[in-house]
Image 1 (tube, rainbow, N blue to C red):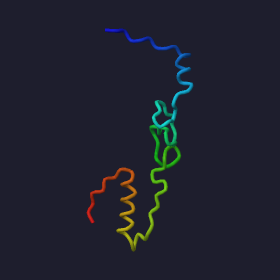
Image 2 (cartoon, helix red, strand yellow):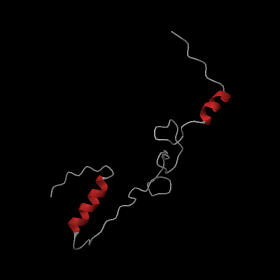
Image 3 (cartoon, rainbow, N blue to C red):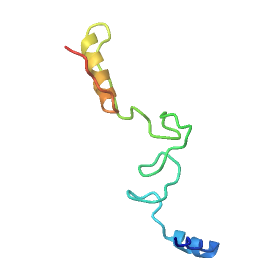
Image 4 (tube, one colour):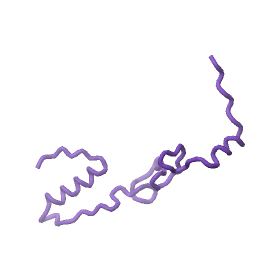
Length: 90
């Protein structure tokens, strides 16, 4: 069995990280934040401050009393866009 290679010293590690691929599409490292290639913190809430707003650019229109079915379909479509599986019938 071979011995593991020794870890590089801090100066060498720092040199490697100087030009690292932080916050890139296929990056190895990501900072925390709401950006496209950033990672969300553990206690994010999807309200737009510390992560992406969950229903950003989603608008529901119509009348709740006159077009209830249409409004419900719009809500279901918005939820389906973020992962809801809608198995309801007509």
